[in-house]
Length: 111
Image (tube, rainbow, N blue to C red):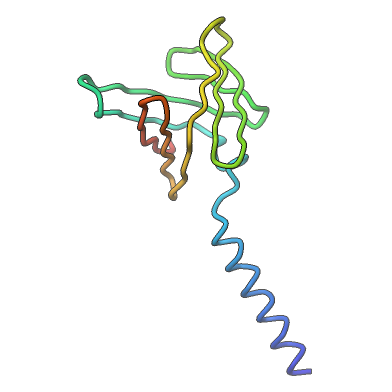
């Protein structure tokens, strides 16, 4: 009986370690409102994005579009003709989301 309990505890610990190592699921971790300040350009750029669970987003100016996630790539496709799609690399760290690509390097914080 003790061996069975020890085996179950080991399996549970390994499962939790595996989940922790994998990090957050980007499909659900991105849902919510994110704010950023990019000081890597000559002027400060302030942005805000709200991602919903139906694959839509809205930015600070009210522009909308669709988003898709494939592994660590976030694709933003604005509803405006000729604006997108944009592929960005994303990394999560707690309540911080880093987006980079196309000369962009932005750190967003969950609001």
